[in-house]
Length: 194
Length: 194
Image 1 (spheres, rainbow over the protein chains, first blue to last red):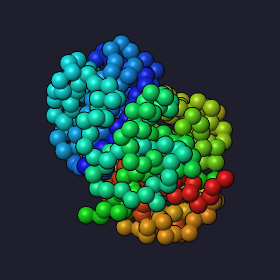
Image 2 (image 1 turned 90 degrees about the horizontal axis):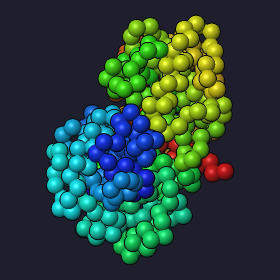
Image 3 (image 1 turned 30 degrees about the horizontal axis):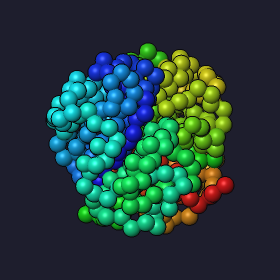
Image 4 (image 1 turned 60 degrees about the vertical axis):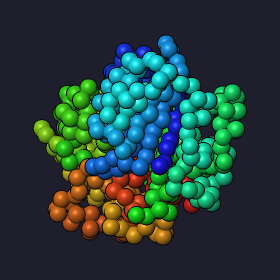
């Protein structure tokens, strides 16, 4: 399993967030959804062995975790506006106990520490000052942690520092999360050809 | 200059295409706009040395070419819905003579043959059966040709066959255009560090 945990610092936690203003009113939900697509989609298909864990930390009711499981998803598509509907539905469920709110979409009230604590694989922190990913040995089962358009807070850094086995960088440039994920997949697709 | 020419076989050529249905009613305009973002954006900035040439071939008034020049763009952002407004405005201009319809956005009535003919750099065709891009020497100034969710037609293949210097592949998997572009940029960013 390749898992991508993306921290959305401003992402709305209201099930009524505006579909027509994903970048603004929904707190850069567009960025999270584009990253989820990079994590889960190939042309005309889903990556069945991938998962995107979205951590939503914006108002009004944080923290919320929405997990998208490639193996079970049915209605995730390239159109992020359509996918936003899956997130809205997930946010209607506000319990700490995780529930599958649509096929392959799992929702719970969990923060970064708890979400990361429940992940079995080795955790790799993607950060610009990390070691070049092309030079790092990576297992088939691995979780990558990324931030949205702002860096992790000091507290979040401390949480991931306790779990990570490596800090990796994918590029000499500072990239959007979706582009970084595409590059990570490419590196692993090349190493683990079917 | 790194240029990406993306052929949108079904992309709407109406200046009134629906902003709320970019994937459906606008003919996979979402795919073209996501690809343009991968071509032109890094975190918090534009790639000033990049260009995205979108070829729109859907109804009602094809062919139309919209060029997005990184060096001059002012209002391209991560939110594709906002960027769709730039395309709509560009489509209001239907002359064969190219005009700058917004800063950095150039519109004209041109087809694949004509658009490709006006490009000075060597042309690389991105296709799944091409040679691995990591093994191909590439100049700093280069144009990559990609198709949207459907393959190039036989006629389009013939047009690009006359111009291309190489056929390259980026992945063992079949990818969305935006992910392929992110991987190409990464390869070149690594080779041509500032």
